[in-house]
Length: 321
Image (tube, rainbow, N blue to C red; front, side, top):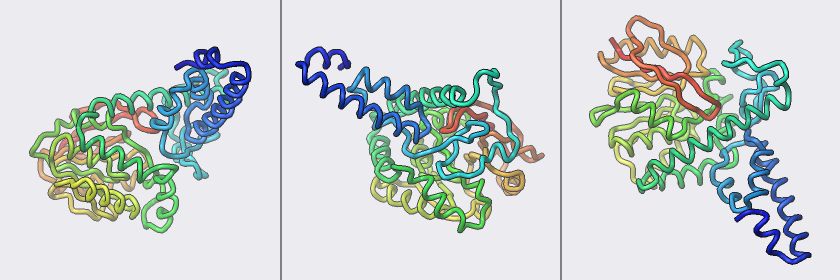
């Protein structure tokens, strides 16, 4: 139903009331979208022209509040002070024209992330919508992780954990991207999947739903592990395990495929992690994001590029030689 359809149908006073309500609603959508790192102007405009889209916005909007780095305009957790990428001197992948600065640059990046994230959410859920367990998983995830819960957990528990805080930076892998990553790694029924830094556990559950294989999630944040175990019990997941702690202290002997979103890992952490795979059996596959594990015992045999909640990243498939 379009705005003009309703507006033309209403009598004189009804038009004024409807217009006033729509303005208030669009203002709310604008500020809500801005706080979540998506284009408030774009979504307010869509809701104004097509009021029936409002429930869709409430469903597909990001679950957490975020902010932008004032220097590079990349997405940060809302309460962050320092940008990991700027601190490490990592440049943006594309150079913007000199005129694309300030608000316009931020707005363009917001629109890009907004459209791409929406596409991945709709397509990802649509592809597996008829899998009952997948649908129930999304409902449970939404009930546990809303209104900035993920970043709040990291911000609250992170400072009390003996792990570099940058390593705990929260980011999300959409289901569509995970599906592409699983295909890159050629997962099959014989594999045992490990997600190192499993966060909400959605990739661990998703892997189990698709392949029926044993899937293990490891995370240092107690809240993530507690919620993941509650979802596991509520939906009766078999062959799914969550382990709380530093993944550098975990036993990797059972795993055949490892997924590591290593974008914000410092060189020391990445080196220690690569060293642990020395004892893994030949043929073990390791998937890393952004960074290659450049060590003699691991060989890169595949590469892809997929979307994450903060933008596109390169994904590398290594094999233990």
